[in-house]
Image: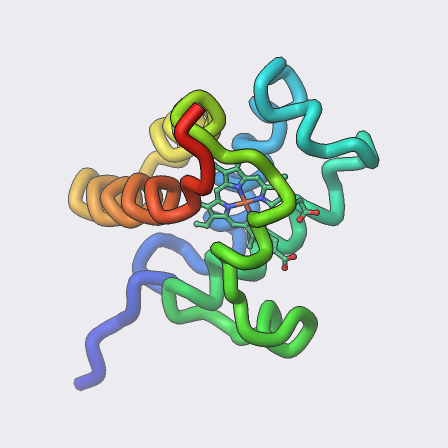
Length: 126
Ligand code: HEM
């Protein structure tokens, strides 16, 4: 039998939409992160993060069909991401992940990845 992947095990698309929706509700209130989104419409950014995370965890590859190779470090170069921005991002994401109702082992696995990914996006030391 094929083991169920992480994407299916946590509830598929609905779970990723819930987490990222909650994350962006926090971003909308965050004085460090909000200025990084001059468009003010967070909807398109929310959709890109949903699609990326679904693909990363074994769901459909819609992200790469629409955006190509993720190259996330390169795509974040236009934004100054220092420890303050990273911490703000993780603070918003923590709320979202904690409220998602995942089983502890799934929550911990997801969180470990998000912390690693946020650290890998650092491109400034101030
Ligand atoms: C895009 C900020 C970490 C995934 C963006 C954008 C900003 C941003 C301002 C542009 C919004 C847009 O898509 O129009 C940050 C900050 C981070 C961070 C301040 C702090 C560490 C991460 C992490 C991930 C991620 C850890 C993945 C786990 C993405 C994706 C996009 C994006 C998928 C859209 C890329 C594209 O297709 O253009 N981020 N980000 N970001 N971010 Fe982040």
